[in-house]
Image (cartoon, rainbow, N blue to C red; front, side, top):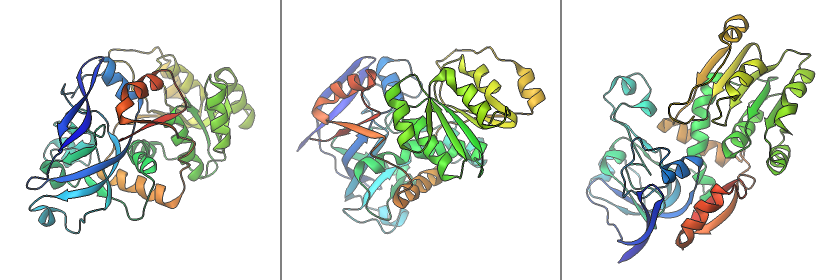
Length: 349
């Protein structure tokens, strides 16, 4: 039996093709994909702006939701209790478990990692194989209660936000500034509010995106108004937390200027390879700023993300706003490039 899949053959070459529907081999699990949401990284893979860890010919898609339809021999000894029909996703970082990063609780930065949608076939297909090495590492993660497929897709980006949040730790009463109102910025805003932030500002040039931030309980502001509004709300002190969710080098200095004394600045967004930024290090020195990054997520972060989604703490409808069938995946990529809506889901036909 055949199934539909999208494969990335080379930069700008995303091809729809028929592939043989997989069966679970020893130690493997097959998911019937119910949805896959797209993110900016998917588009960078498509254009060739991001190539590290990419195997051309791969099925892209790392934010996926599905159901278990086939369980291979020996899986029960590895991960007991899996049943057909269970809703599941995967922690996309398949780590080695042996390198120094893995041994020091940084599996998400594994020296030998493989990623779903990069080297391992991802969610832009009708059926997905979770390979034995991923099952062995505990990457297959099931839900505790039913979620919409679009909601479960958000477990991946939320898990990455939670990993970063562990570094800058929003505290009750904090004033938080989020630079960028893309899906990640809007998720960070929701998480900051859930942590008890007194006020969360989200800056973006798009009036529509600022309106989404407002509906989520944050304050959407134009970039040129962010600093004055934050300073007015804090008696001139600045933001307790600044999260940079746009990979624009000029925001590095802005983030340091915006932060209060003792503030926390997180560079969440990835920047173009080889890019550099001009910033004033004395701002870090004299304000005693804590500056951190945030990349990928651990398996436990995915479980935390699912628990948040199950609690209803995340407004999914304001994030996943558009959908396309898998047969029109090229249109979905172009819509993402044109910034249609906030986040796009691709649904198998």
